[in-house]
Image (tube, rainbow, N blue to C red; front, side, top):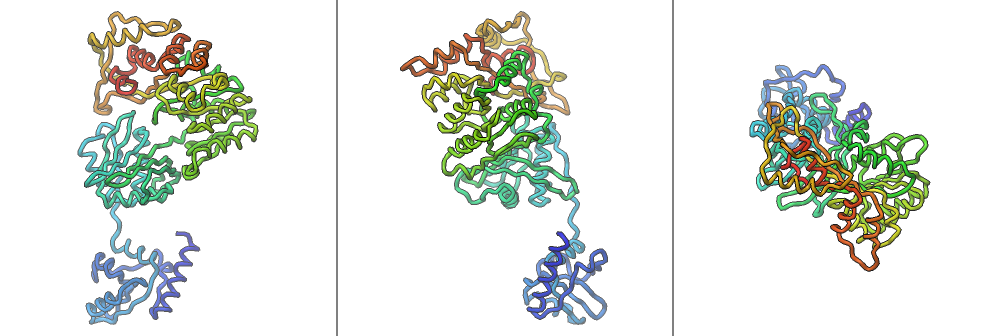
Length: 537
């Protein structure tokens, strides 16, 4: 508490003491040399009675009380110490807490680091649950975020159950249980999350929020809590998913996206053009925002004006104008995105990023911007690149202009990467050989086919430090470039175009599908065929 606030609190306590007819003691003046008397009453009695000894000798006792201390407590203390003269003096709430910390010092909290090898074990669950039960609400949140960052988790899941609350981390795309909380402690944590993220604990609908704050924990460490909140009410309470933001700008580089030479060449060629629409598509958690941020970071320089419209702004870049669209702004409809985009275009930007195309108005405005000298980057929810084109046509109609606006659609998903030091080779089954051969046979003519003679696949190995055998995530992608073949399919008059037709035209134009890219990575020993089935299908 600052000095000015403490002075104000003490002055307010003095006024209350005069009003109530009690003596007053300014405990802020005794800081550093407070004397305590441990054998008079217990700390639990002090809390219950809201009274504690301030001064005492053989014939006198002065108790510090609060304006909320009941008269019955004063009578009880006077009767108990009837062999001495008992006085009562009002003290401030802060002073009372300072004395209580002396009479009953808080237990030192030891924050244990979570090891990936222990994730999901009952011993770890019991240990972390005990830590969370001991600390205050802000520290609970900061501790969970710090450990999630330490384990390179992408998000934290808080899930209400019938009798308790489960906390899980998603690490390399897979959920691991970390702790369980009693419902009472969950409510305390939920209040802290709601307060920091500006959401309601009593809402009947899903909510979105953002927490960006620094928390000093009980052990003195400072944690940068920067998460996006997604909440949904369930039959047992509010479930929360917290998406973690990594604040290291160096991670947003094209070199770190794992693009092949061919893929990098496509991206470089497209973003070198002054206009056009670039879309990154995929499910939640597939790395779309990371890809767009990496492109923005590579484009940012003193000669370009770059503006983004985001819900929320996940990372702040130097030299880029970033405009937040809060979830509360969208209650009147998602056209807020389109309205802000139109306002942004009047600022004469070279590059615009729209966090997500959500509605027809935003889609049309983004396409018009890309046709009038702007490079527009955006995300879109679709299963693959061809489905994104189909959905876009559904949203805005079969308008020939949008075909000429779209430059690149990049679809991606994330699979777990094998730990090369642990992976174990094996001979694939006949079924696995057949699947791989069928996919390889459909590769475009411009892609080199791998030699499958004597093919070895890999299982994840295991070690004490890495029991799962995976290390990090690997993107599998497809890049759809608008070609003459695709254009002909899309603008055929009177025809409703299917995703399959667009995909066949894209493959004929040289596109490698996500499944093909994933299988090539399996053959290269970078991931497992089970991972491809789990993520890509």
